[in-house]
Length: 398
Image 1 (cartoon, helix red, strand yellow):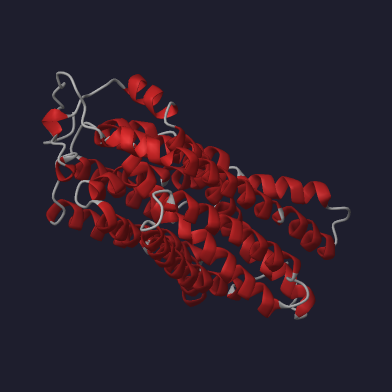
Image 2 (cartoon, one colour):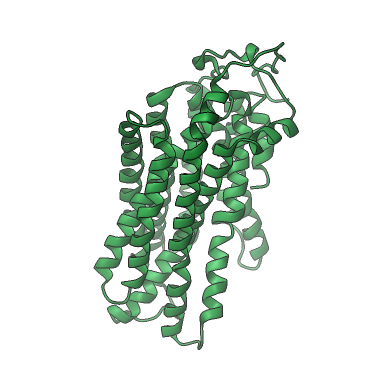
């Protein structure tokens, strides 16, 4: 979160694929190192897990801007959909692979040794396959015609962009719900199973990881369906209204809210109904990923997009998935009347209901975005006037 603005600044000015390669390489190294942390050095485990964020800060702020400089209009939305499949699919596979590797190896440390190899593959592909496109060239706005402003000037311009600010708050609601479910859903499903299926509580010895496996499968499938359906619905709706993108994002959040609410309420009564409602809720929630990125790319000029991505990442993490799991835990602890296993389940159930209300708030932000989207898109698509300020060459890092 803290490094996102740094990578955003660099990504708007220097070679983007080199920056991503360095970030992902570092991320892979610290992930592997965290799996060898001795038990008595817990602080070191926390540090290495925190440094994993360097990888996300490097590619999340920059990769969408490269896609934006390779494709335009509907084609760009399609390619962003392919890119953002990685979020729900990768997260879901993390639960699946992690639980299976833990079962096979009998040691959770091995679950952390899978992704470094994939990170190495990503770095090799970035260095030898990806080509660095010129900023704005595909939009008939070559780099040498684009004006450069300072970082402070970029931030002032972004804060005066209603569509960007409101859609960022809407995306923060998505991150809040996603972060809460990512941490608490498997634990919540496990606690519910103690009452519905008579499963023994996890006190000593290895715990049952089947809930993580099932939740991972649901996340993968719902992510694929959600991202694909969101892009397709938006494409069709654009034929009728230029406000299609924020309206589809609002629809996704507002539809996900009741299904998430039902999933939490039905947890003790019917496990099957709970899984079905979680699947529907996550499907509608996933409709936002690619569309939000597309909104940012067409309401922000090419030379400001990495900075905009960084700002969105900072805000969505700070108010979203960085704090939401902690907030859910605090609320759950405050509602707990006794230390019985029943109240451990009941208090977590009540605290997770917060996600439904946050989803409704996010939908309201996207509805507000629809009021400004046309004006902001037209303003940012007008070629700049006046003498341009040359950009630094994209041949390497400073």
